[in-house]
Length: 170
Image (cartoon, rainbow, N blue to C red; front, top):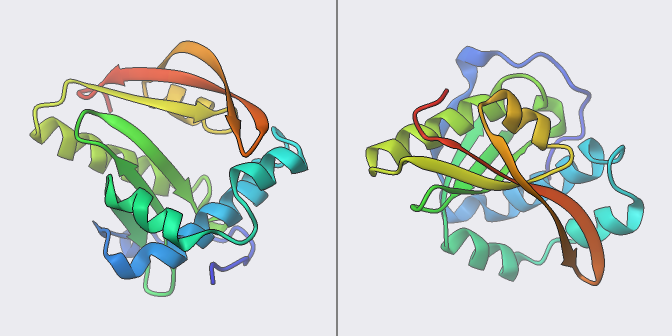
């Protein structure tokens, strides 16, 4: 289970980035759920949070989702800190950190590692659909808003923004 410890100092030298392994699925799904239910509470209501990240994640859906993307995992010696999933066309599909690792540089490290990997594949642009919570992070990393969007998940409507940047920007 993902730690619900308070937001504590993260030793950046102890953070390790590695490729996703199938055995990571459950812990990353739980991290995703904890992240949304902790970090997005000021932007989305309870119905939206539960539609976006049901309290009991469906592991079959998560295995399928991870099967269609490349994923980089951040961890330290004791826990998962975050992950980023991307497609080889430059689409950043998922970028989430554990609540205890929020605003500690973990998401930045994951994004830049994915950007390096995508540049090495010849990708020139990165793009994503960012939540209202994540949009400021992406803006700080050179992404520009392309357009505002409304999406429906499990019958509930959400606001988000489509964003884009050059793969060469850091």
